[in-house]
Image 1 (cartoon, rainbow, N blue to C red):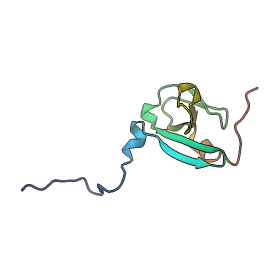
Image 2 (image 1 turned 90 degrees about the horizontal axis):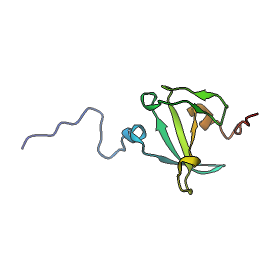
Image 3 (image 1 turned 90 degrees about the vertical axis):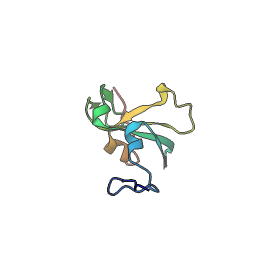
Image 4 (image 1 turned 30 degrees about the horizontal axis):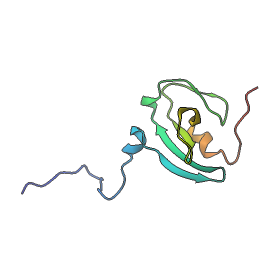
Length: 99
């Protein structure tokens, strides 16, 4: 029987990082609630967004995360695009207010 070749370092019992790049969301818990978080690689970031953490633009080509409440409907209105660093630091600093 011919053997099956696997790429080096891949193990079938460990989840692949491909999910983050293909639109799968991972659950995250924090003091501010339960969230679903999806990573957006720079190659798939094609629009301008405004980060609620720092109120700066997320430019096309910049990797970031899309976040929405885990218990909600997950509609487009509930999703927010954050810089990764801003999302990770949200407990230390709240969302900024636009003036």
